[in-house]
Each structure stands twice: as C-alpha cells, then as structure tokens.
View 1 (cartoon, rainbow, N blue to C red):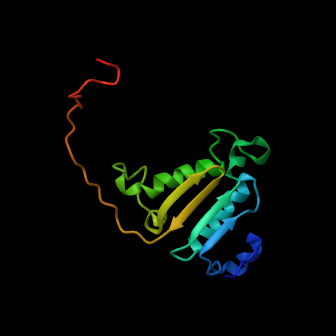
View 2: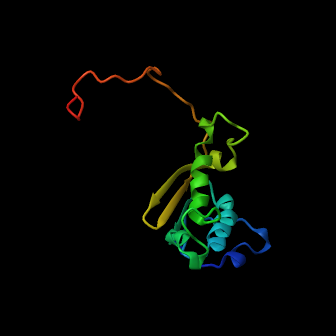
View 3: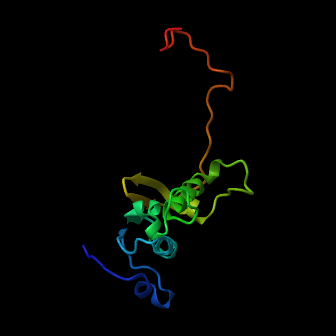
Length: 147
C-alpha cells in the first residue's frame, strides 16, 4: 500500500489525471470552497472503482467556514444535489434532472456523522420496476391506534 499526501494544486499540476488511487481521503481544507473544489477537480479524474471520502463535512453548518444550515453553496448541499444526480434515471422531468457523467460513474453515496463516502463504479441505465397499484391502502386489521 502506498499513501500519498498532496496539495490539490500540486497533485493536478499540468492538468494530469489523479494518481491511481483506490481510496481518496479529503482531510484538507474545511472551507466550503476548498471542499467543493477538491471534489470537483479530483472525482472525475479518479479511476472507475475508486472511493472518495470527505471528512469534517460538519463545517457546512458553521458560518466561520462559509457554512450555515440550508446555505446553497455548502459542501453538504452539494452532496444533496449529488444524491439527485445519482438517482437521475428515475426523473420524469429531464429538463430539471437528467442522467449525466456522475450518474453513470457513481454507484453509491453514504452519509455518516461528519463524513461522506462516494463510491465510483460504471453503471448503465437504472430500470424502474413498479409493483402493486395506485389504489389507496386499506388496513385489513386493527390499527395501532386501536381503531
């Protein structure tokens, strides 16, 4: 195993592909612009089976780091938009949300306390399978409320 510690600007000098890493742990800057720039620059360049981990995402809620609950340009809000892009195959409004390179190259997004893990893997189009009907649900037994 080889561990590489690098600064983003040095790592990508000359617009090179990121090193052949299986796991990237972003433990760098904690400001919103730093976390977003690191992800946007590194993720597309990573090998197709890489895992991207960013820790200290809780700074998205701290004003001193450019964060704040619900602020649109925080890393956590960026991740929420990535969840939409991951699931874009199910969108019925392609003008608002259409599959893209992220959709086709990402297998999963996991959120933990103060950490996000994004797994790359090539994917084809997801298929929607519906079972059942749209009829209202009717309980056939007593409800939990006793009615």
